[in-house]
Length: 332
Image (cartoon, rainbow, N blue to C red; front, side, top):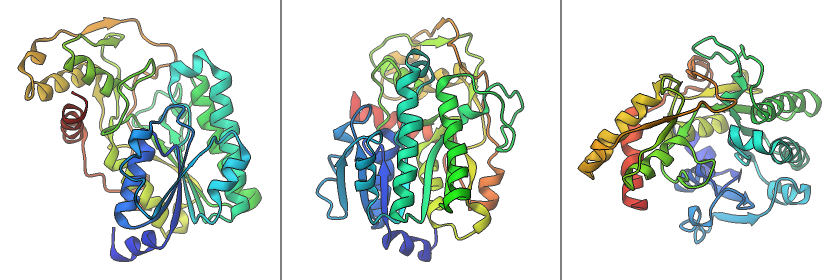
């Protein structure tokens, strides 16, 4: 990022929703390090106060406890904001299958509230967390933004509806938007606990406790695991881009390589064994496949490279080493 772009960020007021979550809190930290004015919104449904504890004394940081399902909260948070990084959502395919109504309330109604509030506040650009789940039953690899299939879960439906609403708000109200289709993001501050914990922090914690993680299926399913710093780069580029062709579309946010779950557990054992040799001897168990799971995901990142200047610095292995080190130092 050049000097002009950094200065643009320093002179901007940026709202981050879902700010106490994994991705949101990392975005807040990155923006404050640059010198941006940051407003954070969260209701702590899935985020944690501890993720923001080191930011509260920063004079450029304001926290609002609120719910995106409440339009008044959205309006308050958007007041005077130049940009919105909308991360607030109820993630997890299994959660949406177990409770589709709440997932829809948060991910669709809450998203619409945020769009309306951003429109009414005169926000310059609305950047939102989209999802690779939107590719659904499409079997083509790598995934290219313009070719999607039918959604395989209520969660995937909600994230596709987000894209449709964003597109419509540009056409109806001239609100510029960018959607970032996240591919299995991982890294520091990702919650290893709870029924819907992501696979990497969950497996790391189980290995550290000398427990055997359970892979859903035979382990051949693959994912384009994406380290958090690559995701931060995409969000910042989405704010500062002056390329009009780059606006009002969606981008794969990934590294562009895939790793099977068997390969993932092998790497985790290798990296964790540097801290505890016994972990290298632990066995992995296998269970039934999960409903709604996409067998394989692999992103083409050509569009982001060409239009946004995206240049991811962390591949799967280098990101995983960083994440494992963070978990060992902070959660052991």
